[in-house]
Image (tube, rainbow, N blue to C red; front, side, top):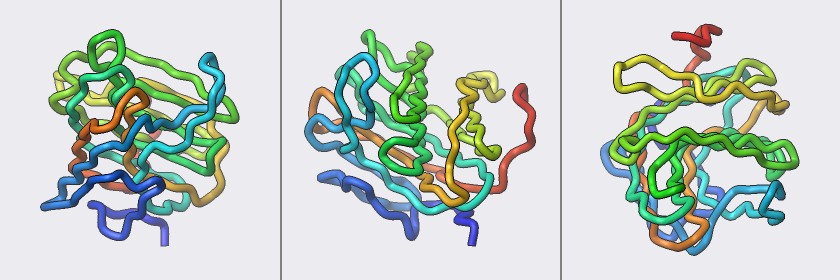
Length: 195
């Protein structure tokens, strides 16, 4: 079984949040105190206590989700995650920094990196997708004109079966609420970077 499918049925939590629910295809999760996924770079700490709702997926895939959140405090974040273990993962979504939501991606191979792009409207609603092509992960978000914009193309050596799902964190507080709909994992979309 490849793990393809839609919705949140059969998924499990890594670091279950203190409050969450699934109703009519909407997952709502409220974060615990000072949660995050990060390793070493710049800040010098390792955090692996963010909330990750996931399933196992084998082979190449495209994961999609629509998300929104009550972004208010530095580093409030929600999005998609692809994970092999605590040292090898990608998270991509919306993160609050410099007083405005940004689309962001963090790729971790022992050490984390971080890229951001201001997106003031992203708090209300943003569609994301991550596609695995072997050892490459392609992160895209939907622009206001309906097209998909490439945010990141990165190298991440993953085992054949990895964990795929949605994540949320609030490194500076507790009580950030993230909302996820339209989650699906399907066969990978074509290898066109500019669709």
